[in-house]
Image (cartoon, rainbow, N blue to C red; front, side, top):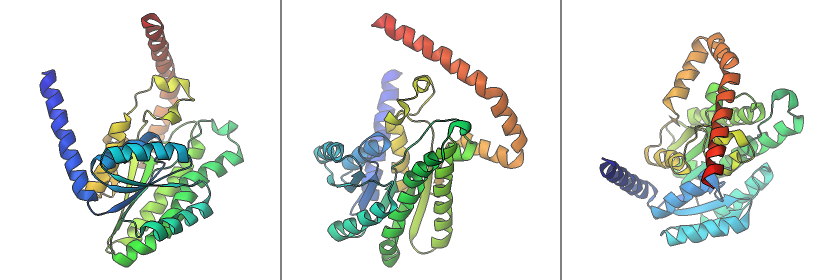
Amino acid sequence: MLDRLRARRHRAAQRYQSRLAEALGGRRIVITGASSGIGRAFALQAAAAGAEAILVARREEQLERVAEEFAKLGGVAHIQAADLSDPYAAGRLAETILREHGPVDVLVNNAGRSIRRPVADTKPEDFGRLVDVNYLGPTALTMSLLPGMLERGAGHVIQISTIGVQTGAPNFSAYVAAKAAADHFARTLRLELGGRGVRVTTIQVPLVRTPMLTPTRIYRAFPAQSLDRAARRIGEAVIRRPVRIAPRWTTLIEVIHAVAPGLLQWVFTVGHEPFHKLMKRRLDRMERRSRDSG
């Protein structure tokens, strides 16, 4: 039974890589936040599909290591170190990409940052920092690369978002607000570009095991998606170019909120504290097992 399951997963992975190779064949893709986390995981999947990619992140040394892995897997990688929390730097990055590599076919706006902090403790500068990196930077990069896509009548913008925009997320007001702004920009862009050959996809990502979770100890106990599976969502977006990719359960919550917002408020109010207590007990068990096995 286990062997059959493994064989099925292996075949599914092969089909995915084949479809991704077909979708990326002859196309140039830009992946931001490519030095770690979901960005790196998808970059390596694209490399295995033989893609040509421009990898963007702040940390040049880490980008160089990813580029080496990329080449070993059969892809062609170019690296560009840039701080996308600066919209002007994002614009200059686009100019460099167009000058050195030519038009872009697919843009994956993956770079982002999160802060976990109650609203009462959130500072105005927290909102500013998160709006810069999650909204203004990606928007500036998109707007700078968009004319080339429109001129050719072809292109694809993929916006990496969070399920928090659909469900709400206590203690993440600044992060969710910034991502919501980016979501609505992508939605408006999609409506304006209908029929002009440029597709826009928003991906609502659930909790994922990335380095961003490390500072928050309790997240070790939370259910979270693997990096590989989260990266495949980006690959599926490249392949199918849908309007949105999101978990069904968060879409259901979004519908409930639209129809009965008071009900969702009650669920969050009543369930938030018990859920965190449950996760705390789970974390304690995990840490005890880790100590005992060590």
